[in-house]
Each structure stands twice: as structure tokens, then as C-alpha cells.
Length: 95
Length: 202
Image 1 (tube, rainbow over the protein chains, first blue to last red):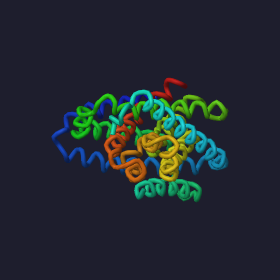
Image 2: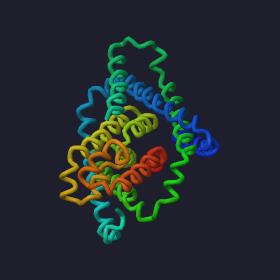
Image 3: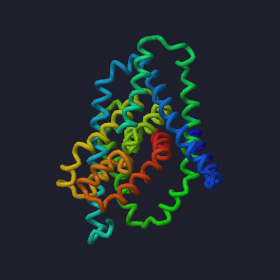
Image 4: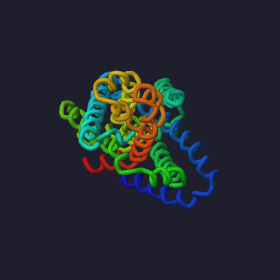
């Protein structure tokens, strides 16, 4: 199953990365490579979306869903953090 | 912001090329992006694992510092689930995974589209872009209504880079460290939490 592979490869990378701690070259290459991999994958996502008439037709509806989910996540985060601060954060110790 | 525009241009370019029908057959192969995703996850792991400053940051971090990212995680997942109760097209698990993008739209959209398909990927991309935009636009109101931590909470993973300027301006300079810490913790969690939520709640 692809989800297991996704998490598995991340963990393998995490462990492998620890051996490269003293090689700054590896880190620099990795972040450059990561940037291009993200560009490439979003390009692929664009291609895949462009070839999927269902998605293209539904874009307004998907946009509305995205908007609502985003509002929910933002309000949830702001409220829960505010509550946690009221409960635990006295005298501004955090800042 | 500059990199956001580049990222979105690649996405838009993909759509335009696909719609134009100019692309060669092999580029339409689904497994191509699956392998690219596998490779990306390996590289993300290597880059996190090899980062020396990261372990330094975690060593210095106190438990109270985790309150903000923990609140963002709980709040984002809860908020997204509540919204999904009213949207029948999106399952609770997918909604939570989208919420767990914390504004890190490139990685969360790639992961969610790879695991759950294009439609969910597009919603994830848009929802997490909206999150960044809301934070930038609503920053002054958030501070007035919910206090100084609210912009950091709203910004989620972006509090360490794209929304940091509005945090510094409207919450104060002394919030910089907590904003960056919270942003780093949340960014690191995206590649683990998003796939996990998709498996666990499928």
C-alpha cells in the first residue's frame, strides 16, 4: 500500500540522514533536490487534474469545500491555542 | 511568497499543458508521479535527518513551547472534522488530513493527491493556500480578537517563513522564536501526520 511506502521511505531517509550530519554538501543538495521534486510533483498534479474532466468541472465546488475546511482549521487552531494559553500560560512566560 | 508563485505556476502549467493536449503519452502515466512522490519522501527524510540545527533546536526547547503547535494540531483537526460533518463529499479522514497540512500546501497536496486522488489533492492545495492567505490578511483582526498567539496558530507551518513578517509586525518581535519553533514542529509533522490520518481513518 502506497501510504506505508510513503511513511516508510520518510523514516528510512530520516535514519540515513543522520549519517550525513557532518556533510553540509548532502544537506544543500537535498534541499535543492527537494525544491525541484516539489515543482515536478505539482506539475504532475496539474497534468493529472487537467486530464480529469470531473475535477475541472467541479473546481468551483472543490474551492468552496477548501474554503470551508480552511476556515474550520483556522478557527479551530486559534480557539484551541487561545484556550491552552488561558489555562497554562501565566505571566507571559512563553514569550 | 515568491516561491509560492513559482510552485503555483508549475501546477497551472501542468493543467494548461494537459488541457492543450500537447503532452506526450508517457507523461500522463500515473505511476510516474507515484515514484516521484516516493523519491521526494526519501529526500525530505534525509534533509530533516541530516539537519544539525534541528536537533539543537529540539534540545533547547521547553515543554511549554509545544503548547502552541499542540493546540494547532488539535484545533486544525477538530475544525476540519466539524466542517466535514456538513460536506458529504469529503470523508472525516480526508478532511483531517487536509487540516493537517497546516498551510504547508505543496507537500500536503502532493501527499493527499498521491494517496487519495486528484480531487482531494486539489482541495488540499486550495485549503492550505487559503490558510496562508487568511493569516496574512486577517492578522490584525486575529490579534485583537484572540490575542498575540492567534496569528501563529492561524499560520500553522507557515509561521516559520511566509507568515512570519505579519507575526512580527502584529504580535511583536518577541514572538519570533515561538513562531519559528511552532512552524518547524508543524512542518516536520506534515509528512508523518497526513499519511497516518489517511490510513487510520480510511
